[in-house]
Image (cartoon, rainbow over all chains, first blue to last red; front, side):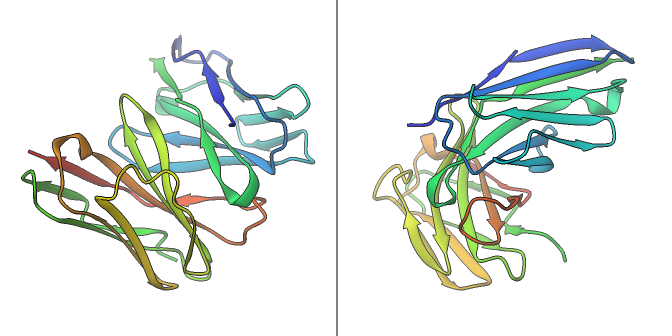
Length: 111
Length: 115
């Protein structure tokens, strides 16, 4: 069964710092990997989707990489801002469109 | 498009009562997913449908839980009878296709509290 792990579970950084969130998965047979953001009491907002054939995707200050063979993905956030404070979840898609989620990294960006 | 719509947003009920959660997927999407999120267990997939047909319900915790999708624009998740341990946020999500190559969009969730 696919297991998705996110490290660290929580992260606190000063505003302006560049940071990296990590996601690892046990089964490399995935269709894609998606990074989400969840604000307290809210739903999940999709940030980036990386297809299994891709190595990275970029959107503004966010860059996500995928190394399928080693079962790893990273989400890089440049020049962090207090508005980036949220929980970030990664999810991989396996057979039959089944999503497997990590437990998330709770990010706090201090002004 | 309004995105995935869920109702109600909040539900408070007493143990033993029937609870029905509703979801309207994004128009044109043919796959629909129900998830449950708790602090202890994180985000769990309960069931998903493709073209209105249940494909995988292995995540449904007990027979007290049932889900239907009578048409492409509506799905329900029912809990009968409800128990305090069912308290969680229930999310509905939709996507286009079955290949796993497409982005999944989430609704705002229904926060269920069973007293």
